[in-house]
Length: 245
Length: 312
Ligand SMILES: Nc1ncnc2c1ncn2[C@@H]1O[C@H](COP(=O)(O)OP(=O)(O)O)[C@@H](O)[C@H]1O
Ligand SMILES: [Mg+2]
Image (cartoon, rainbow over all chains, first blue to last red; front, side, top):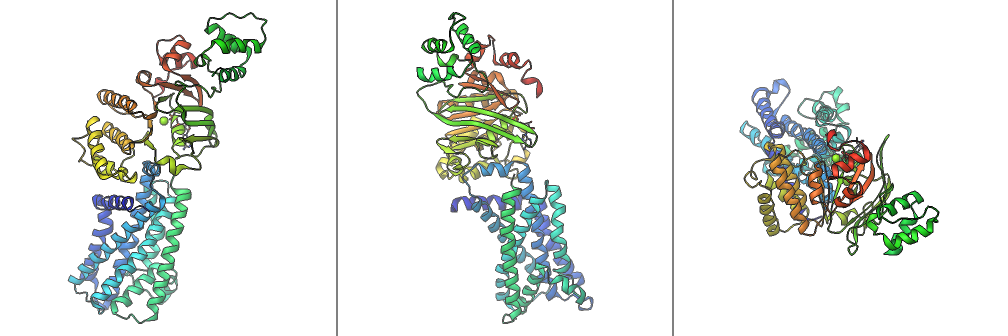
């Protein structure tokens, strides 16, 4: 892997994110607005949503919507012949996929910081203090791998960027309902245990509570890591074989 | 050389041999045997005068002292029920400007894409600078540049950023990159717009940027797929001038175009392709002479009864 090539690709990907209003809206502004709405208006213990369980959900919510952005980007670049063109350069697919992973890990970290900063202004004070916040960053970044993977899978299935938008909901919706800020009841608990984002919410909750010796954290982290790595590998292989032309 | 000519002549039938003889203004008695005619013609005939029949003989070259840099053998490409390329045999000589001419859907883009490794051939082999396209694509990618038919640029980047990205992917050094970028932008008249995002460019400007990106690595072999389509007349003239100047830099250029007049003026050789088959091959002069026409468009008309241009 050439460092110079990787840097050039990451720079391009970051510009793509920053310069396209739809991306900024969906992946930064929307989670920010949701954070404000949820913490300002609804964080009332009587509604069953206390601030400490809502914040991890909001973070996860932001990261799973990256699936849509990634899927749209891959399918529109495929449609415009850009992927083919990139393929005629000496760039390797490891460099290309590596840049995707690095970029989206970086974006997910920015998302966490935005949500946490807004939450802080609205009264969120994690017991873990700054250490918990720092620990949450790499955990979310690892989960962002799965968004890249699911984005690639979505782009492989969809022929157009428009289709990618719709199809990405196959992955986004279950994670939204069973693994974000929506309270889990005893009946949804069983479904939730099959939804990877549920484990991230759980892990973040425990991390922010400062309950680091809890063995559940290790279990959560194991599930998140294994799931994310498998999904991104599967996505890359699938896309390379069936999705890149 | 004469033994090569002989082996080529031996592939032809008697009627074709008589045609060559007529072309060379040699009269041969009707009762001569085929081998005798071959012997005679091999002494008298320049290789360029063997008329093209299907498939075109491999050895058709302009400069006998330079080696072929691209060798295409028995290439075929099928898309489900469509045969896009049928049994293509062709050699491109190092340093020549070769134009593939033909109506829409003839198989030009498919040929270019297979040479670039974007598409896989159904049958046949291709070697570029000694490397096999299906096996050593990585080595080939380092020496080729592509200007695809559809302008493929990042719309959210400006021209300079687009060029820089592709330059870096080719590991062009920073200083080289800056110098080449300035140079190419200036030559194609895109300097002024170079800091605006490509998303706001006109069709012609996108085409120019598309071309510059293809050339930023200073590639040895350049593929230009309809480089001037969608440009206004002025930009088109400028671009053709520019392509002409590439020739002087000893680049091997393979281009496809509908603009036959320009191709006629600039090309060392042209291949005419129709329904996936190479139906004529030679220098523009040879083809016009062979078919007794004043221009290449008429050559196509004479062979197929159609015009190349009418289908766009
Ligand atoms: N990806 C593809 N799938 C199916 N058919 C294709 C594809 N690409 C090209 N073709 C067909 O192959 C033929 C040659 O196309 P092309 O090479 O683009 O022609 P040209 O560049 O000479 O206009 C056309 O009939 C076209 O419809
Ligand atoms: Mg074409």
